[in-house]
Image (cartoon, rainbow, N blue to C red; front, side):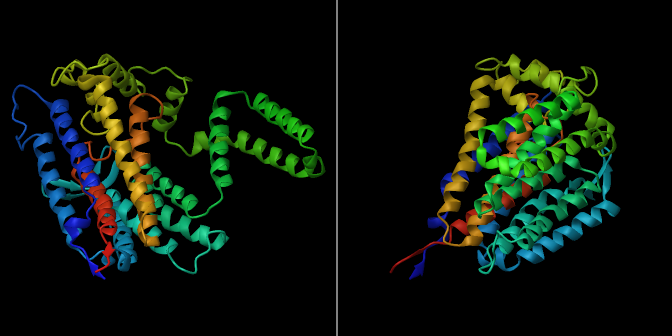
Length: 418
């Protein structure tokens, strides 16, 4: 057997999807910060000019990854993971504070955010651990170890504090379900989240009464459960205790601005000039784009800077306003196409490590994609995470590029018979 050339084995569809999203991001960053004094898209004093530098360096970085031996990433997965954990701990003490978070290393004129690199490092470590031959996902010790790998970076990032970036790592739990973890745990997670929201919206006693009546209905419908009524009653008591603990957790765990954002999202508060300002202006911008948009550089919400952070967290507003439903749909289709392509390739992998890593990549991209667009249209609270490959930022683009190109390199290892 012989190994084909790397260029022959690279999945160029994934590369093209990556380049299309990166270029769309660059053009929309230009539109988001454009003014008459800086008209050239190559003006390096502006965000779009700097983004061009980030794009060029990212392409170079991707090319370097593609020529590295694919075994390097599995062999040194733990080393990379530990090195990034050290970077995360270091930034807590040595980092530059921006917007209340100490999340960046200042390197000359540029800032480096290690949490963006923790995503691919954690994905590598998780894939390395779960790909062990002797591993049994049904064992509690295996689940605990996987959880420690996933959430250790998250805990450190919370110390910065950067809640949005810390939440991203929860997406890696989805990888465990592909590897055999029971789907009942996923349902349990959904129920817990739903109860949390309902406990904030509905009177506690009414909610408990609703749960109790449903428990009685289940026992009446399923005769086999009548003998296990104690278990049903126990579950009901745990649910009741959880419902009554929500207020305490909400008031004592979350920061004041986080509580306000959730209350605004749930309709419990109206703060159009404060916590609800970003979302309101975002929805106005996207809605005003209509079907085909107002046209390139003609977005009024963009031009007059009504939406804060429009080139980063709220870049999708620019897409919606200037390119309308058509442009927004194109971005969503390209992002979905990239994630589906990654999953298809992951299922074709001969190596368990490569398959698991591929699912980790898709999970992280999906979380960013769903939450970022969700918060711009008012479905999620604003937590400050970028739209992959499109939002402005060097660390973000480099992090996603490394994350994706490691998988492309893993996929390129294919053999053919002589």
